Length: 265
Image (cartoon, rainbow, N blue to C red; front, side, top):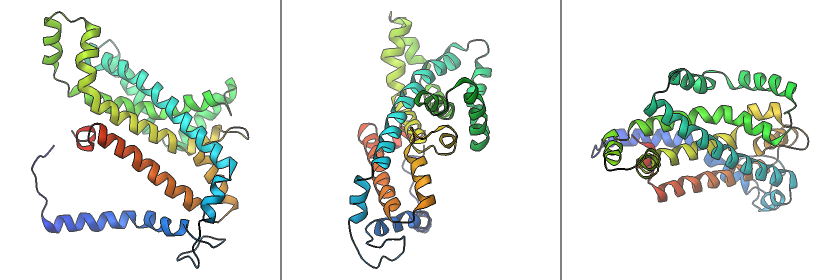
C-alpha cells in the first residue's frame, strides 16, 4: 500500500472523468425511477412515485428479494465456515495435498459461468436438487467459496507468524492462538470476504437461472423475467434501491474496519 502518495492534478482529473463515464448509466436510473410514464424513457415527461408504490405492492419481487437475502446470508456463513479452516490448513499446516485442494476449490473461477451452470444443472437433475433452496445454496457455494479462499489466503499470509509463535511460547494452545491472535489479525480479510461472498451470491443470475423453479426464484432471476415482458420504470426503482442497499453494506464495512484497511494490502 502506498501511504502518503499524492496523485497529480491531471491524473486526478482523468480518474474523475473515467469514474463519471462508468457511473453515467447508473446515474440515469435515478431520474427514470421517478418517471410518471408507462414506459421507460429519458428524460421522463412527468414525475411521480407511482412505480415505487407499485413495487411495494408486487409480491413476486418482494418475496424474491427476501429469498435472495436469506440465500446470500446462508451462503456467506457457509463460505466462511469452510474457507477459514481450509485456508489455515493450506497456509499454516501445509497438509499433504493442500495445494491440490486449493487449486480444486478455486477452479470454478476459471470456467465461464454458463458452462458451470450447465454442469451443475446436469448433476443436480440426477439427484433431485432442482428448484430447491439447498440446491441453490450448494450451487452458489461453488461460486463464492473460491473468492473467500483467495481473500482469506491473502489475509492469513499477511499475519505475522512471529505473533503466533510468541503466543504459543507463552503457553497458549493451538486453538487459543487461532482464536486470540490469528483470527483478530485476519479480521479485515474476513470482513472483505464476507462482503464479497454476500454480494456475489445476492447478484448471481446465470447459475440461478438453471436451478430455480416456479415456486422458488431470486431477485435477479425475477427481474430478468420481468424485463422480458414489461418495459416500465419499476426496474429502475429496484435498481435504485439495490444501489443504496449495496452502499449501506460498504458504509457498514467502512464504519467497522475502514475500506482501506479491509480491501487494500
